[in-house]
Image (tube, rainbow, N blue to C red):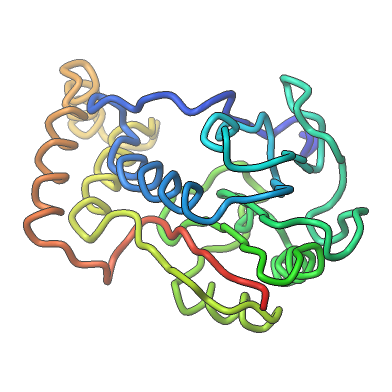
Length: 238
């Protein structure tokens, strides 16, 4: 399958209910991403890997222009510039803010992508970046990397950025709950009848809701980020 035919893109940010199998990651990710957008987004903004610009509403009243680039036109025709993330045909020092969410793990030359963000930002501009430490394989075979907070710090500082914030999305308990939800949700024809039966009952009774509630509670009471699902990072070009 051609890579361009294998890209799934969000249309918009919908409220994720407690019955959703991905609730535990989005609970923290969307909250923290929205916070940093409100705090740091300004002026002309570039969204690298924008897809359908699902976070567009969050920028209302914050920015003067929203330009999105991606490797292919999106289903809602929201991409303004079609290009590779490490070779963006736009003028240097021309943006006040840059956003890139859940894209870097799919970019072979992730250092080149971060270098481009640095080139395109004006001095004192902010780069809002997010990416996973834990997530199942997706958009295969174009799922290349996972990053620790130290990995993100290394790549960003190598490009010339100063780290402003690194925010974990979910702790160890939330990560464990998310792994359970993913494991149960995926069909495996090689599993024996007992395992298939357990998965069937779990899905039939919609036990995602129970897992989400229990592990979200445990995550609050015993928050530990040695295991986390995702990071939201803010970096500054001085």
